[in-house]
Length: 345
Image 1 (cartoon, rainbow, N blue to C red):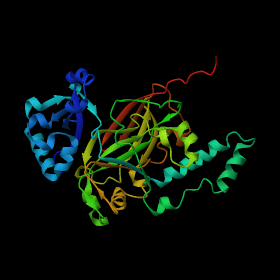
Image 2 (cartoon, one colour):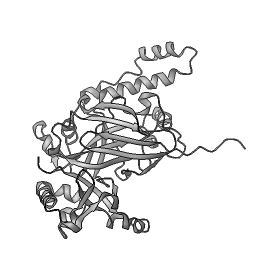
Image 3 (tube, rainbow, N blue to C red):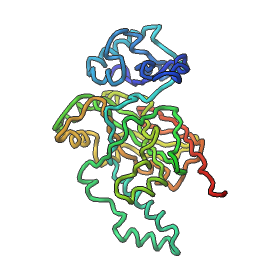
Image 4 (cartoon, rainbow, N blue to C red):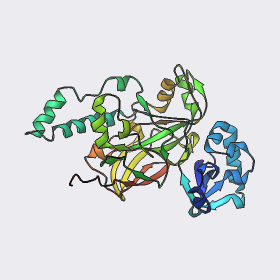
């Protein structure tokens, strides 16, 4: 497989003060993590003027030739371009995806989420257990068969992407912020009407994805029938990172362990082997009638038990959430859940 390509977008720490005063576009660099993730090679500094290293999207669009050149630079290890990780700040590896769609590829998570929703709905009844059984028997909380038959998805805000170590703040009016343990495929080439046997070739690589949710707002708004609205759509609500691992580096992306930790304590563990649909299935489906493009990001949906909601547990203000996918890395964020204004006069 050659050098492991763990691609990152970063800013140098001596630029962070400038970054607070001007647009980040001129400050971000694309690089490769090396030496057990203790160093990063700044590709643009190692090969000045090469267009493929102007941004992560440019590298993705450059295809196999760009990756070949990046591997060559890693072997050369150009001294001035090699930085210690202590001297950089990681950003989302693809800060501005061309498009971002989150799919329901893990069916078991959706089923467990519906059961938990029924349990919450029955909590205020005189006999909660009996009410829960009645609700489940009613069929109202059965998973729609379409989720098994085809790839279901929603379009997320590709301009609201956050990255490693970013602080994630609950949206206005929310007091229940929740993580979602997912990973994502990054599309590497344009394709329309992609055939199943060719879909794998359209994957550039993989990253960790946290599809944050404000559960109280989500439950309040979804009965309107138009989706979760700001329950999932708020500042920084789509977190990617810490890197993109190119597809050739993962022997089997459907045999990876996925783990969620809160303040260092493991809350959830699952595996990509539980996916009902694959990323290839998603590419085939999403390329019908229109194209997928380099820089499109496709979320997996959440692994079973991969949310606090599934576990009947809630995050608190200041909690540190770590999502880890084997072979990719750890995506870490701190959550802020500001206290709601008191109704007292």
